[in-house]
Length: 396
Image (cartoon, rainbow, N blue to C red; front, side, top):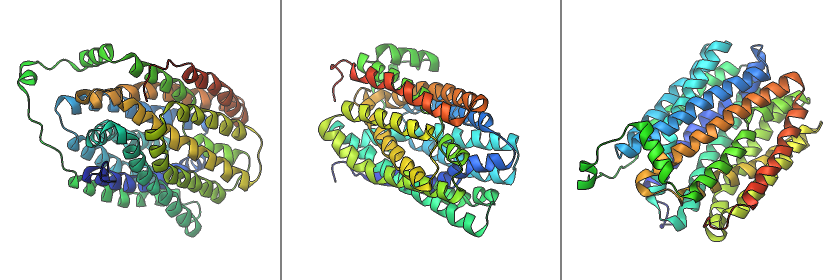
C-alpha cells in the first residue's frame, strides 16, 4: 500500500469523492429533468456534446499550461471550484437555455482540473503501481458516485419530481470538495538551466511538437480510444432508454446506483490485475462488454430487474475502460509532458464524444432508442478488432 498510496493521492481521491456526490446527485435525474421542462433526446445530445466539448478542450489547453508552469494544484482548485458553483444554477433557472449554460460551466470546471490531477497522480507513483493508483482514485471517486444517486433517491421519495431542489443541494458536497483541495501539497519545481534557456513555445506549437515527438505506441492508443469515444455517448442516454421502455424513475435511479457501486468496488482490484497482467486483454474485454450491454439496452426489456442488471454490466465496462486507458497511456508519456499528453488524448476523446452524442441523439430523434443502441453495439466490434490487431510492440 505504501508504495502507491501517498498523501496527495488520498487527498485528491477525497476531493473527487465529494465532487462525485454532487455530480451524481444530478447526473441520473438530468434526463428526467430535461423531459419535465419539455426537451427531447436530441436536445439532451446537444447539451452533453457541447458540455463535453468545452470540457475536453479545456483539458487539452490546461494540461499544457500545467506542464508549462509546472503547477498542478492551482488548476485543480479552480476546476473544482467552478464546478461546485455551477451545479445549483441548473435548478435555480429551470429553462433549456440556463440548463445548457450551467451544464457547460460545470463541465468546463471538469476540463480545467482533470489533466493536472491525472498528471499529479502519475507523478506520485512509479510505473509498476500506476494502475492501482488510478484504480484506487477511481474507486474512491466512484463511491461518491454511489452516494450521490442515493441522496437523490431519498430526496425524490420525500419531494417527488422536485429535481430543482436536488440541483441546489448539490452545492454542499461541491464546496466540501473545493475546501479539501487546499490540503494538496505541491512539490516546488526547481527550474533547470536548460528550461531557463528554452523559450516557451506558443500553445499550438507545443501541441504539434509533443504529438510529433510522441511514440507510435502513444498515437495508436489515442486513435483506439478515440474510436471507442465515437460510440460511447453520454450515459444519460441509458437513463432515457430505460425511461422509454417504461421503467419507473425510482428503479432507474436504483439501477444507476448499482452501476456506480460496481464501478467503485471493481476499480481497485482491476487496477491490481492490470499491473500484474497488462492492459490489452482487459481493454478488449471491456469493449465486448460494452457491445453486449448496448445490444441488450437496444432490445425491448420491460422489467426493473433486467434494467438494474444492465446498469451493473455497464459499471464493469466503465471500471475497466477508465482505469486501463489512463494507466496504459501513462506508460507512453514523458514525465515533463504528462499534462499535455493526457490533454491531447482527452481532446481526441472529446471530439469523438461530441460527434457520438450528436449522432445518437439524431438517430434516436428520428427512429427510436432501440435502433440507436443496437447500431452502436454493432459498431463497437470493429473497435475491438483494432485493439486485437494492434502491434505487440505496445508494452504493458
